[in-house]
View 1: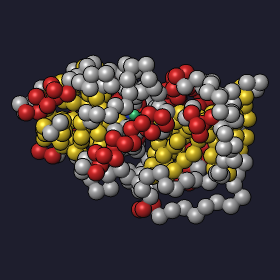
View 2: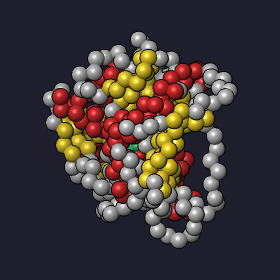
View 3: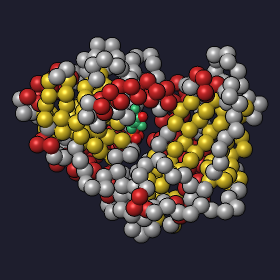
View 4: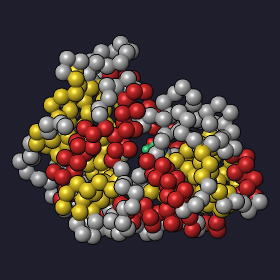
Length: 357
Ligand SMILES: *Cc1c(COP(=O)(O)O)cnc(C)c1O
């Protein structure tokens, strides 16, 4: 158990217009902080007024990107409970990312306690409009001052929160995806399985180029042969072919998404065969041309599911389900969001209540 000291802001910000929230632009009144030094370990857990950091320009994080982050949401139910979805999974993933990034780990239960404590302080910031939520962004940065390339000795763990609007204010809209054949996101031995900023810095260029060509996102192929599908943008990706569900295994180059894992569990509960393994893009395109590619969708905390209507690979195109969301994608969306916003009973033990709103 952390002994978290809470210092409230002297003046609170004005709450935003909930119909114009967007994503990740407005931040709440407080943040969680905890520091690491070799002598004290992780210490001084605290909730303090939201404020800029003062950091030496020579800090390791600015130059060598030793950092990681997480992303999850707090939801307000119709009965006015504030709740989280599987925060322990985010805590475990952060623990695993710490190992890869040489950052001293934070126990999963401390992570969950920190998130719950901050969300309770900020409960009035959890928006009320259907489909909106409080996005929670935990992150750890390396704070050693110096240009030497080595693991930092000192770190800061911070959690900030941002009220976010519904991802699909105008209804779910399937997207066009560019199968990326030049740039890669990950390769065996690299950091693809860790949620770290470096992965994103490396992926911005491909995303920009695809956007210019009119695509919403890129589909990443494996970094060695550029033959097997891995992820789409910053989401995991699943394919329904001939009634079975296929997705890449989380083998070190794929980020182990909490949404992916939850969808797989639900699909198996519903009797679908889910195959986690290598899926060649050529086989996906072939299935598309033969009318066997029934549904394609990304999964991630922000959107829950993002249906794909078109895949373009080296000029070859396949179109999926008449540009409409498929029934399995829809059922996953309804079930996941139903549990998250408390419209459906949680028979999986995934919901963690925080407080009354
Ligand atoms: C965060 C992330 C995901 C999705 O993970 P969730 O836990 O479902 O939000 C997928 N791929 C990448 C690269 C990510 O960073």
